[in-house]
Amino acid sequence: MKTITYIKAIIKLMLIAVLIVLPTHAAMAEVDAAATFQTGTENGIDYIAGGVGEDNRDALEAIARAKYNVKMVFAMRAGDYLSDIPVEITDKSGKKLLNVTSSGPFFYVKLPAGAYTLKATHKGVVRTQNINAAGALRQVVFTWEAAHAERASTEAIKAEVLQTAALKAESAEVPSTATFQTGSANGIDYIAGGIGDDDRDALNAIARSKYNIKLVFAMAAGNYVSDIPVEITNKSGKKLLEVISSGPIFYVKLPAGAYTIKAANEGITKTQNITAGTSHQQVVFTWQ
Image (tube, rainbow, N blue to C red):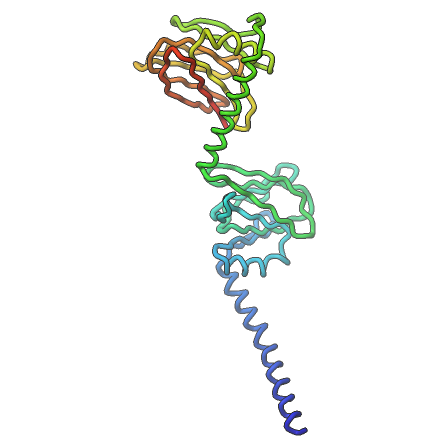
């Protein structure tokens, strides 16, 4: 009996020692991990950022989850985390409360209850999300496409726009041209329009057999745009045509040869070089 009592006493002492040592090590681990994080306060808004590497992310989450009510995560859509992300937070009145670059893919912030707009930027592409902050932790994820994926998406939109227009043109009847913009400059004939489905169908039906170049103007999201300044120069740099297209569809008849075509929307100019021939050619201009 004495032996058993002695063993129990030793075990109890060992357990007490473990309980004393563990919190000390945990506190040291927390302090050491926190030293690698980005912390700060702006306009009374506290934040902490980091998460580069799995161990760092785990340590950051252990520290931050109970102290902050909004967690922002930055990643590529394919899954890779992103760092060095400019972050901007404004309140519902538009006042900028926070403007900082997150050092890691995790960014925790403590916001008073209310409505906010969060912005995060990667390689010039801005993502925006509106949230309502409260007491409970809210996770907001920002994702970006790879550059090649963005281009692929744009190409898919172009193809869809062109295919839809071509299908509708095949079944369209030929009405009056009274609603279209027509003209000629330096011997170059053109016709423009296409605001609304019926107008586009009618324009396509009239123009496809008379003009060899068709310009289409649209946003990358798929919606057409109008009032687009168009400029066409030949290979020697001579300006042949400069006109504002009244609609998203612009047909022009060009002699065989090489040309540079420019189209502008909201101050952003897109340029494409083409070689005109006798066959019909479609050129699509898109803006983000």
